[in-house]
Length: 437
Ligand code: ADP
Ligand code: ASP
Ligand code: MG
Figure (cartoon, rainbow, N blue to C red):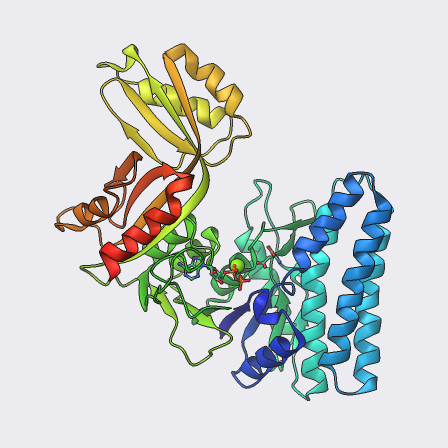
């Protein structure tokens, strides 16, 4: 059994839904995970924002305009009046649910309730379209098996057990369809796996059913060697080790949600990144095999803040770093990069929520300097320390760019540079020119 996940653009129009139906229809008893049609989650977030901002009229206008879009989708997708009517009625139920939800504007679950409708609509449309085409499939409600635990982490034992019994109940099913992204929390309240989280759903399902492969179908032919949104002439990387893919996803390669590698890696399930628009392209295979001797790709992570603590007390003091880390732990802020010297330590965070409180506490160690609007550039590949020349090459590419921090040796797979956000495009281009051309 394979898991096949299709992202928002892959189901973003009636034609795309038809293309995906053709792709999944004859591939066997797989589990297909769908995102909401592209733009839908953004629109649903806008609707909840309008409600929270106390503008129900705007919310109603936005709901109606989204509903109009879906009326057009239904008209174009189905070829018979009978199925158009069935699908319209089903879609109308979801829009009425949204209207009902906004009638309780103070509900703490408002946004989660509203955004959950995106994936529910797309999967219902796909299920109905397959039926119209005479392709049998079973719609598995994600809310019946996808759960997070009391720490907000996916509850894999629960997911495994409940998904197994749903599959067992449908022993004759030729194909399963389910929603990405949405889940319930440990209290049974509506929740989700955060933006882009359908990739995570796919890998959790893959781990739960011990799938032979997890396929992430998107709008590009695999992981490229640099961010195609900023660099021209990028090329797909054919093979990546799980660790390399995890570094790239974490440090900004949007094609993969950062959390989605872990469940696949732990269960040794290969992940394949494929292009819905070019289904025969080989894409990228991510597995446990390290292809040695070269740099695979470059990625960039924005909105980084650097914090430097300069302290006389660090000199020869054991336990200093522990005290610094404890402050970040106390304020629930993860650290991305770290470099040290005899008199100080620099580190980066990507979440400024508790920055003021952190800085206030850090002041007791010495001088604290903050640099905002920074970007981490991450170079990923076989960067085992015995290999010679790769770090030099990456550094050389950045010769004209001011570098605030460098981190190397934390893993065998990455070297990271902290630069000003305004230098990001230049840095990405320079690295591609130096390393891949
Ligand atoms: P989906 O909606 O299918 O989940 P995403 O938009 O989340 O798709 O991810 C695909 C996009 O990721 C691509 O269109 C591309 O612009 C972007 N992207 C960023 N970095 C990379 C990279 N290194 N390789 C491929 N795509 C990348
Ligand atoms: N629909 C959700 C989003 O847009 C989840 C996903 O597409 O992965 O973030
Ligand atoms: Mg995505």
